[in-house]
Image (cartoon, rainbow, N blue to C red; front, side):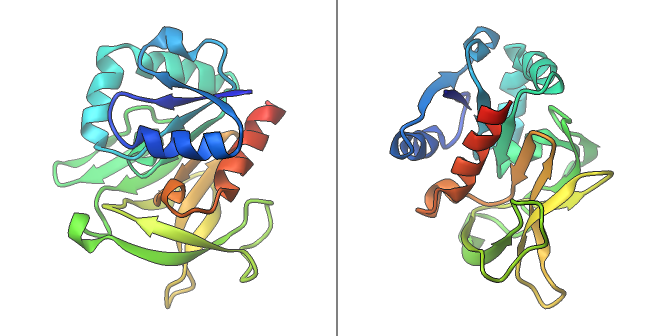
Length: 201
């Protein structure tokens, strides 16, 4: 088992630490050739516009898209989630996501800038059931996007709000997207869930 981490820009080392704790092999991905021999790919947080630029420049967008469409698992966190979404909204307007592999809309910086970062309990439904109060997860939000599911995309986690909870974890097949940073929480459940998903692929 070997999981790749996109290493063009962003919080690569935090995900490496989690994979080391879980005793899972990992490798940094910068070029299409780096995808060979991998069982899954993590798209970390960072600056989504910069990451999208490098994806196109190095041809990684095409390479990742082809592999995921063939069943390759991928998990995007914060900026990585923005890359995965089919629609992205920001100050510059609305457009397609860099990879467009998940039917969802990402609204960049919807929860505020860096100084507005916060932690909040999330309820998970990663077993396919409705979110349960017995499965709280510590969510760390840093310049987080708001995620809105479209089409057949499922809501796998919600932050608690007065209206019942906003979606913050989405999934469709082997594509997962989180608005928050589980790698900073000390709770490895979501990484373990992704590893099990990759093992099943």
